[in-house]
Amino acid sequence: MRQSGVRGMRLDRKILFREKISRLNEQRWSNFDFKRKMSIIRGGTGIPYENCEYPVEFNDTLKEKIRKRDNYICQNCGMDNSQHIVKFGCNLSIHHIDYNKFNNCLTNLITLCYSCNSKANFNKNYWTNYFMFKLNRSLIYAT
Ligand SMILES: [Zn+2]
Image (cartoon, rainbow, N blue to C red):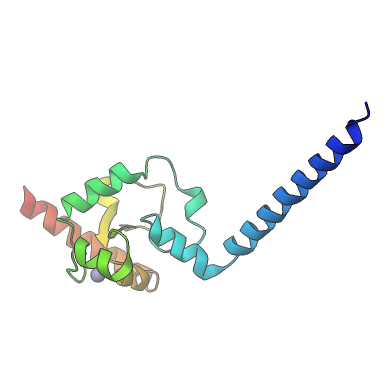
């Protein structure tokens, strides 16, 4: 009984600490650049907000599969994975051709470097058509 006050205080402090941390995280995650950076680090497309909502099937195994299919080369500029690691500190990104992160068909995914991936966030129609064309062509050649 005597200790309940002390325990209560400790608990309060713990809660305050947790609140402080979550507030800090909130601030970090509300930063556009931070989100984009985290997205790239995690092998995403660089579109902010995408991280927390990625479906489970878009995992490292799938990304690695796509990189392997694309010969570990950016399908736009030709940068390879080791160059990418040196320049951007992470593996080549996997891009969703139709911008729908829930469409994880192999034909909707393509390997891109960070800078091509960023470019693909603008003129979305153009890039969708371009990558679909490119991917179809390379799949035909591969068979
Ligand atoms: Zn590139």
